Every structure is written in C-alpha cells, then in structure tokens.
Amino acid sequence: MIVRVRMSAFNETDIPYRMVTVPNRDWNNYSDEQRLEAVYHHGQNEIQPDPKCQSVSMGDCIEYHEDGGLYLVMAQGFRQISEEQYEKFAALSITERQMKVLFNQLS
Image (cartoon, rainbow, N blue to C red; front, side, top):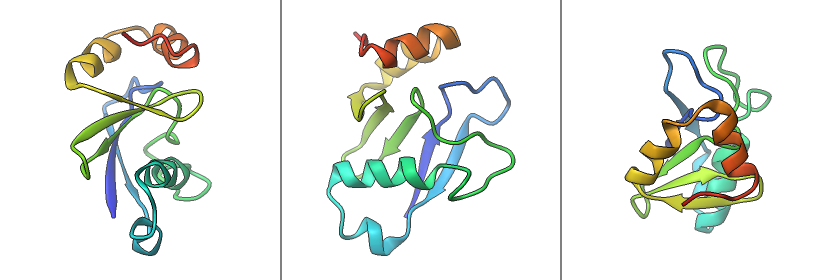
C-alpha cells in the first residue's frame, strides 16, 4: 500500500508530499490505528530512505483513504482533521504548528 503524507511539520521545500510504502502483509492485517502507526514507521528515513524528504514527523498529515480522512501526527498518536482544519494548520509558522501538535491545541 502506498500512502501519501503531507510534509507540513518542517517542510519549507518544493516537495510537499512523501509517498510511504507499507508492505501489504502488514497493511492487510492491521487495524486503522496500526495502519497509521505503520505509515509513520515506514516513513522514517532509517526504514525507507528518501534523500529528497525528511522523515515523517509530528505535524505531518497522513492522507488515509480507507475512511477518506486526514490524520495529523501528534506528539502521541494521531488526530483526524478536516481539510479546512488542515489549511489553517498549514498556514501557521513552523513553531506554531509544532506547539499545536505538542500540546494538542488544535481547534
């Protein structure tokens, strides 16, 4: 399974997305939460190197098409957000984005 992650945590480059491949053997046997964890895990450069992108980090947003949702990587776990919430979040400065996810202060 290939999942697109919006690189909104620290990304100030021309590469707004990272494509993360999760092995089908994992994907097919996992719950939704485990799938999100697998995207985070396989999105680390130590696991799936991508010299053009940083690793998936807190503040990035996983496009999870199983339920059509967007999931923001929080300091602990994930939070489903709407496209409107994402646009407001992405418009913040890097520091503000990190504080929002660190202290779970999304509105």
